[in-house]
Amino acid sequence: MGFQKAETPPEDAPLLSKAPPLSSNFKTFANIFISIVGSGVLGLPYCFKKTGWITGLLMLFLVAFLTYHCMMLLVRTRRKLQSNEGFPNLNSFGDLGYAIGGPLGKLFVDVMIGFSHCGFCVSYLIFISTTLANLAGDGSRWSLFLGFTPKVLFLWGCFPFQLGLNAIPSLTLLAPLSIFADVVDIAAKSVVMVDEVFVYMKNRPPLEAFGGWSVFFYGLGVAVYAFEGIGMVLPLESEAKDKEKFGGVLGVGMFLISLLYAAFAALSYFAFGEETQGIITTNLGPGLVSGLVQLGLCINLFFTFPLMMNPVYEVVERRLCESRYCLWLRWLLVLGVSLVALLVPNFADFLSLVGSSVCVILSFVLPAMFHYSVFKEEMDWKCMVSDVAVMVFGLVVAVKGTCSSLFNIFGND
Image (cartoon, rainbow, N blue to C red):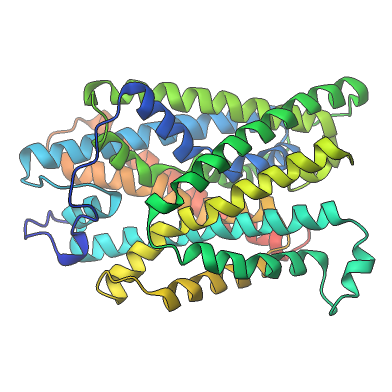
């Protein structure tokens, strides 16, 4: 895998003509938080149910540490190439793939990012349709309408509105929706955690501490999905005003997110025990507050959908339409994501599948491989062993976790 010193190809042309304003440490921290925290946290309680809460906590912090480590590997690799190898403009994960692996390297990274973001959006639709069906209740009555289940009806009910949102060409126009979605999300999750404390004090269900090795890789897939933000680390570091402190800011951000995830997952499992569902909000009892919380989370993911699809549109339109806006292609992708969402029966199982099959490669294997390729002439044996160990670990998790997830989706649970 050699370094490509040719001029940057047309697909690598910057998307913006002007450099974005640099971010303070606080703004960098906020951007890190927004980039990582997503729908994956809603599947962690079910993951704790399958793995046991102690195994789940250990697994969660292990994945957080490895994700931070691999994010910093990407940052160091980019800095090395920019300073010594004559690559002044490496603004994204895909650019780094081109510098190290040429057009094929960039293509592979783009495909992985495309699949991962489509996977995120599939999980959004599964959550929205399942939650709205749960709020509607009385599934037998709804299923009589056109012969569809409530989940299917709500999913197709969202479809025309998503076509409209995904037709918006600019992220700037979507920014107000993003801010609104984040506020709703934080408020909803806070209410859920407070409610779970009271539920636990009342019920105190029996809990499993260790679920065994058979579900370990399944849980790792869910955890990797929850921390998936590897594609944003290079743009965030580029926009940081104090780049020397970026590693510290990223470390603090990952640590606090880990604590938030651990608290949310543990409280949810403690509250409901073996009754914990694949989407934790389905465990919330009836009532106005519960309904508003679930509706708020649906609103958050509904408006986040076009934002998460945007990197997919950039890749596809750049390669198939010469970077020109293509409405029919965007709508075709939305249709494809919706059809996949119809085929997946369980939210947490799908998170594990995406986390294991795609996110593990992006988060662990490629950063370690890129770092090794750039630094192999000067690294000592400890660094070499570390990079190889991360690559091997990522490949093992990818194979075992994908098999475990597929078994949970299509086999007997």
